[in-house]
Length: 142
Figure (cartoon, rainbow, N blue to C red):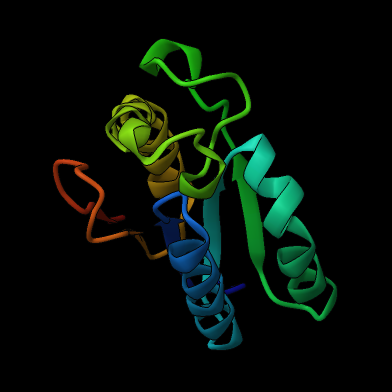
């Protein structure tokens, strides 16, 4: 009888700011080095900036996947392409960035639910402490 590899799957959802994304990518690499599957939620502009770091880790054999979601810039009152705190035209628009991150909550939850059903042992979501997602999720399969 073949045994199924039992691995945890972490979804990382960093605050879209360099000082938060870089450490979250480091956490992803540390988790992946311990045989954990890791997904990082990111956006197109942030992939352009930080994707090469993740790609190098993947080429080194780490199980890290990027989950690219469309950033709701316009819906939250931000100029198109402003997907990170340091790309805002003014820090007065920081609250709009948080509105956009809250709008992403549903997509992240849907991804978590799908991944939880597919994960052999369980799933946990790590979010930045400044994110206002309602709660971390842990789904254990029976």
